[in-house]
Length: 436
Image (cartoon, rainbow, N blue to C red; front, side, top):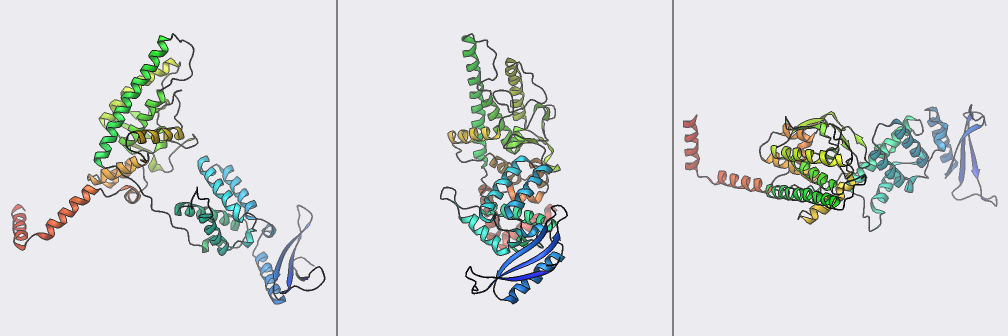
């Protein structure tokens, strides 16, 4: 068989008889590989008539003439997905948190289609994959959410798009599949009364945390323990409460709050400068967008609490022979370092449960900030800036919830407008003309 030629051979049973329908092996010779010195051959099997086999041969030749790689006939999804992931990790263009999340999703996909060759993946294959990934879960895990399925679709589309770039497949079958719809999140926003109650709870918890820390140190002194220490038990309790206070006052994300250092806070101006964030895995990174880098004003009460905390923290860190600098975390742990996001979330769940706010997510303080500001008449551009969004539309869509009390006022307003008699309307219009 010469280079570029195609051969069609009937595959028979061990006893020499034909299958029904007949089986055929179609082979295309790609010539000698200059690297391996061996001949590259594309081979496929098909059931049907010889005419069907001829069509397959012609299609294979057409595909190869379009420039498909010789590896296209051999590469499985799992093999290529692994290469794709390694390239992503080498490029170091995205965070480790994102990379770990992607690897988990790809491993899940590979458990279903990992052994399928890239060239054999069709739109139907992908639709079947989505159905299995959405529903083939244990009762404990439940089905995948629409948002997770949408993420899976985007990731698979990226992988197969790269396979097209590498001439391993002619077209991306994921483009023919409709992306699963993201779920509409059920975001809770505190009412004005609830927000006031939470702030009062934070005030009380802060006082208790200071008192507890002082009591611990007094017991240490009474025991006469002068040994060198590497941590101060109870210091992180104050750091956690301060993080909650900052979150409620500013609407900053968890990672942004935990990433604050004293160099980011200006007491003279009463502002906080947001330039970095701490990820779930403890990485410190810059915001995703330029809009995420911002300077936001802080109310006077919060500033006073931060001033007191800064002085207290300085004195406490000196016990550990540590100097408080511009780079010292505002919300520190017992060793004076950054509080791990997972540790803070654990504390937050316990704190909210113990004080009547069970189930309240820290991120929902962000929703509360936006909702209350919009409901109070604050312009959307200012709210957008405080939250660090790239557009006011995103802010409005995500966080501007309707408050029940405002809705009740709107109902009364529309009722009074529609129930006015013609004479009352005339009097109002006359009064308006006189005023003008």
